[in-house]
Image (cartoon, rainbow, N blue to C red):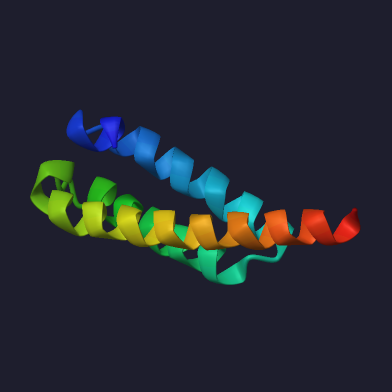
Length: 85
């Protein structure tokens, strides 16, 4: 959220990339695909010289959806951890 407020497109894109890879490693493909979609959107913005401010509402919505998906993945991982005990 701080990167969004500061219009730091590179940090958001790097975070989306990292989360995409981490999600895929865990088998959380829906989460990973959401991150991939955001990463591609931000790459397109960079290439077309579109400022983050121009698509801030859209990116904010994407981040909320990604956060919800992350919380679901986290919940499943915690359940799995409890099952192992």
